[in-house]
Image 1: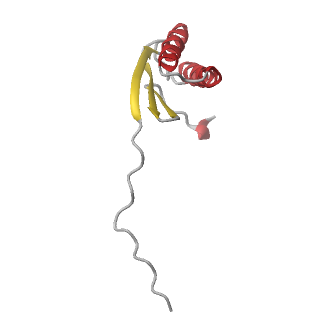
Image 2: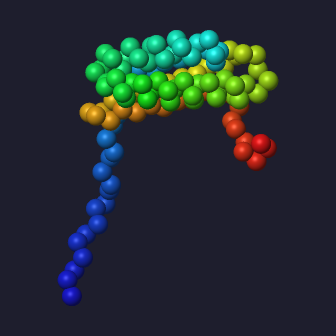
Length: 109
């Protein structure tokens, strides 16, 4: 009976994505276009394909609009910030979107 190969004592670290930029704007619907304009400039500067740029803009616009519309929790408009971290590792583009609004509770909907 063959002896199984030893299992490594550690797992390899995942690739580290290089962060390009963090964009932060007030949570106001009028500022979503500012966010997307800044995002577009970063993506162009790093040679991201126009089709991908359009997809990224749509994703961020939808996330930002939903965060503003539903994450206010009674706060005045613009009282919380929206943040997008953009990372690039070779051909892997990552986005991390966050906001300071109230979390969504699907059980209360």
